[in-house]
Length: 267
Image (cartoon, rainbow, N blue to C red; front, side, top):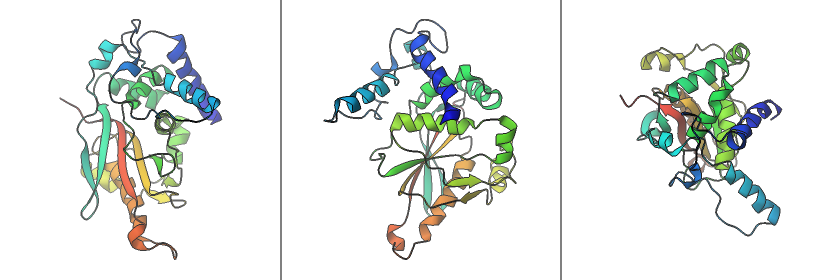
């Protein structure tokens, strides 16, 4: 968590210290919290203690928007979900927050390849458009961020997907699970065809431990063809058919769904 502190500090400054839109840089007068329906992640009213309610109020305040209303509505949100096969007769549904087009494409590339922290507030705004999956909460679900290789982590010096996943965890109030790792003998997926991507990801993931719950919410920054999420989903789904001595096979299957910042292009 100490590694995430600089990023969180920058988000606080963008949220409270900078009242300008993260795209057009004009004063943003309308908080995103006033925009419709995508805030299913907000926790409903409850009878918790004063301090718990105060903390929730502060967290919900951070769900306000980082774009002005004009820029927000100029972007197409929540494209139609698409599916990839993870087993015979079983598909993995992938929901993206928006399309991989300008200005999101440039923001993702700048943050991912150059650790440009000025782009992070825009990406968090995009992230907040993903509605929390129905029926999922902290006690029955975990978020599984797309793992990176040690080689790539050393090269970049940071893991952009894990940083974004940590923000998604805060937004949805669902914990992260780090029980899967990526094998170092894969190459970058960028520029590969779908067939090449799938071949590159054969046996690319390995589990260090079994998931603690049955609902697994996979997350990646970009789902171009869905190949990476498909390979990760296959690895996790394969564990569904390895029951323990105390867990029958029929009740041991995981429920998987996947999410991403951006997918494809609307053009």
